[in-house]
Amino acid sequence: MSTQVSEPSEAVRGQSPMLRVVIADDHDLFREGLRQLLETVEDITVVGEASNGHQACKLVMEHKPDVVLMDISMPEMDGIQATEYIVQRYPETHVVVLTMYTDDEYAIHAIRAGAKGYLLKNTRSSEVIQAIRLAAAGGSTIDPSLGPVLMREFQRLLNSTPGGSLQQLSDRELHFLELLARGSNNRQIATEMELAESTVKNNLSVLFQKIGVRDRTQAVLYAFSNGLVTPPNETNRA
Image (cartoon, rainbow, N blue to C red; front, top):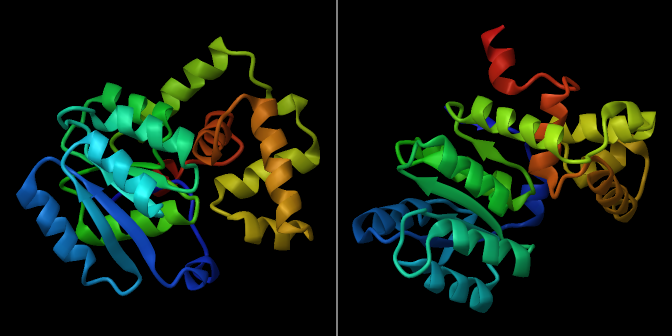
C-alpha cells in the first residue's frame, strides 16, 4: 500500500465533480490500459495522452488538467524535466510520477522538480485513483519503500540550507504545520483556526518561506523530519 502524506476532504472532492487528467507514458499498451481504467471512474476524465515530455507539456498548456500521471523515461523530454516545466508554469496542475524506477535518486529528483507523488507501476489501481484525487486536492502520495529515503534527503537539505527551525516558529505557525502534516487542506485549516481560506493561503506562503520549503509536500516532510508529527509508515509499525 502507498503511504499517503496528506489527505483531501470529501468536501473538496465534492466541489470538483470531474477531475481532468493527462497520461504521459511512452509505452502504448500501458498508457491505453491506464486510460481504460480511469474511464471507469466517475469523477475522472482523461483529456489527453502523451508519449513524451514535450507532448505532455503541450497538452497541459491546451487543457489545463488537474493532474498529470507522468512516466520518467520518455524520449525527447524525460518526465523529470517535464514535471519541472509544468510545475513552474502551470501551478494549478499537479504531477504524480508513475514509473517502474525504484531508484532513490529518481524519486529525489522527482520531488525536487515538484511532483506531488511518486508511485511504482506495480501499485494497485485503487491507489493510483486515490493518488489522483489526493494530488488534485493538494495532497501527496509516496510509495512506502521510498518514504524513508525522501525524508533523509529532506533532512540533509535542511542541514545544508538556511531554513528556519521549529524553535523559530510561533505557536500559530506550528499549528499550521501540524495540520498540514496531518493531511488538512486549506478549507479544513480555515475551519479549525477560524480563518478565511485566503488568509490560510497567505499564511502558508509566509510559513513556507520561513522554513525554506517550496510547497506542501516539502512542508510535510519538514514536519516529519523535525518530529512534529509521526510519519504514517512509522505509525503503522508501532
